[in-house]
Length: 132
Image 1 (cartoon, rainbow, N blue to C red):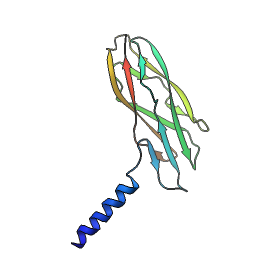
Image 2: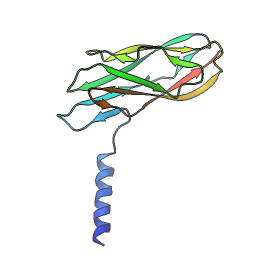
Image 3: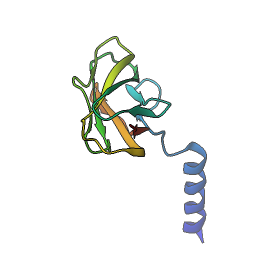
Image 4: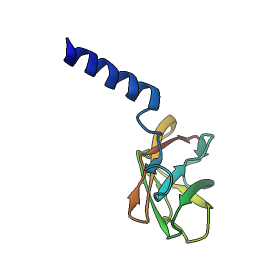
């Protein structure tokens, strides 16, 4: 019976405090923290074309360069390099590029993660569309 009460108390504690937020890395106040924010709206690109979009980072207790990694993009779609948000910069515009033979995609979930200051974030999700 004691172990059940302990398990219930632990479950309530985790439920009340949460398990973390997508796109965040770091601990409590006083520790370095890093958060990445993906585009809030779907990014649409035509085959053979490019489209700009913005990614933001929030750094706490450090100000190093942050390297981004994009995954889950539709076939034939990439993000032009470099994938870095430089020291002191919080937002940067990136270019989504679709090959001329990229197939139409109504909606595909992609992710962006960030690394910097010895931290790595959870993936932040965004939607990519390829439309003629």
